[in-house]
Image 1 (tube, rainbow, N blue to C red):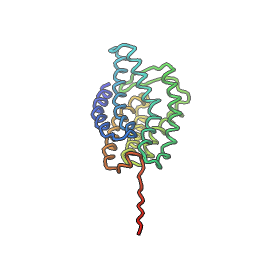
Image 2 (cartoon, rainbow, N blue to C red):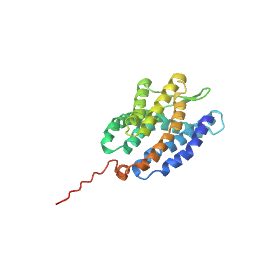
Image 3 (cartoon, one colour):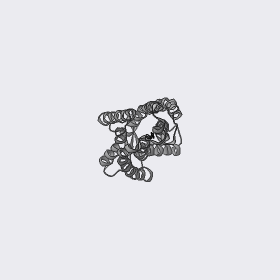
Image 4 (cartoon, one colour):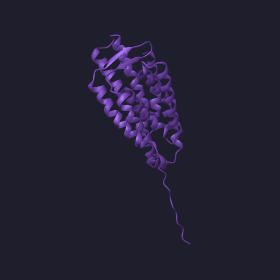
Length: 225
């Protein structure tokens, strides 16, 4: 719970600074990710408190469902969409397959999270969310491909770095703490979202046409003699 609270609190100024860099609507979904991760960590604080009996059971249940909805169904579609909107028009086809895959994963995991019982199991340094998932390994692989594959296909180095950092974090958590995988990897992803602020700051140096429409406007001037 302490890690969730510290990570969420630390991300509040990062989220504010990232949103301040938004100049066009197409940049907003990506810039909202640090705020989403901050909210995500605060939601798990309420899940921990629910296990300790410090908040009403209804509030703890709502926080748990909201936390899982962000972690499982939302991100596979939201991350590829946010990345794709930032890309130049011709480069968006590189990310589009991951968005399509993400929509499929989101549809299934939405059913899992919203229509099935979920049990929260407390471990030493994280929480395990146990629910009914058919062929969990397959869905886990599809989830990872959608969420991490999209940033890796970006043409911006800071976004690629975000994908690489999360891939490394995913591998480390999977190897050393599989039981609380979702809980701990989401903390890791939240901390790495500072790279989103780095990207938004770097966008200041892009040509205006790149930021506004995602492609460069080539002007052809003909001169008569």
